[in-house]
Length: 94
Image (tube, rainbow, N blue to C red; front, side):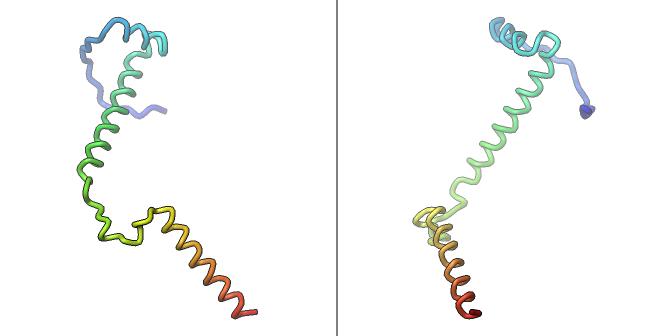
């Protein structure tokens, strides 16, 4: 079931070729919903980009030297250390 939200009629001017493409995809009766979905997607995308740009520089390599070789290398080291601890524990209990 679709969530009811307050809507308002608006006038949008766009190239005829774009309008024809939209109609080809969703039909003339599907224009409004298509444009709402496309605009909502773009608003979220632009907000996310702005947030990412705003966070630029928040991560410092000096604060996380363990990642200097990359996240995958760090993850592999953690897994190897864990495997080593498990092997030691197994050997101790055997």
